Length: 209
Length: 182
Image (cartoon, rainbow over all chains, first blue to last red):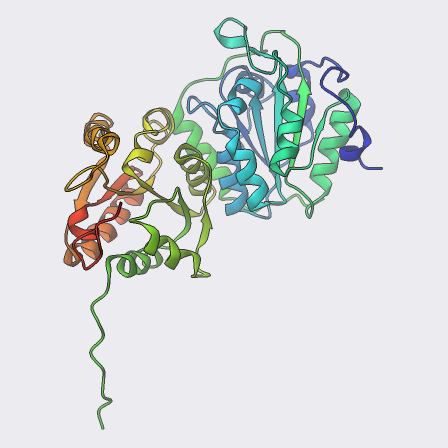
């Protein structure tokens, strides 16, 4: 059984409480020239702290648009695998994009959401997931294969599967995360971030699993 | 023997825009529907040259077009005035600071005979928003200007890494033999 289907019946309540910085480092450690779009807030800070890569686009505003930006990259470069990293508060602002991604069906796109049930950067006010909104159920309802992340090993297996697979997808992964602070802060230089990302995207994709 | 060439009917604004988009290699089209833009949208859907996406919101489309641009694919967003009014945050926090040549075509509703008060009020917000963000914008009023304005605005946008808003005035879209749209 593959990792995506291994814990299909898992609910948010049963998913292990994981650490965003740790999971981000586990993701980045597995990447070569894949693109990563980091949504604003602590999602972004932890992506920065996990080791800066020119293939990372660090959003500095435009809350909720990590997945749409990643969709654009995935459409432009079908041969490159693309990951969007978002927080629960961010994806809640742009739930329609899940339907758009399901309709366009880019096989190279993975959307990962860290669900800590809080707007952590603004003082940890509760998000709607704290009131019971289930983002995996919503993604499935939008037409995306989706799963809760059971634990660290499951997360690594899911990422390895996405890196090895170039036909199925897009896929939506959601991890329940704790309230630990991020491991760093992104440098805010938008034109530099955009330029470096574009230069990296202009290079041919080498890795092919 | 010279070949007899029939006199072709004059191009419509939507035909001209399709031709200009192709000439500038703008292959990705995102839109949120608008009745005035319907003939253009229909033409784009029917043409294999274009990848056409209709997302749930205009803001989403700005994200898609921005990502595609950074990865080497040129795109555009088509919308009506009320859709543009949902965009100031993304324009101010992604498009302008990251210097992304975000191409936008806005069908101008809420002026020159509109009967919906909401459309009229939202229309009055468009130019102040564009001016305050220093985004290049131009209203196209005559068929004779469609090619010149769209082609030059698109080229300038990519040359200067800056957004461009092409406003389709009712003078173009409602007067050119088409009925005023509800």
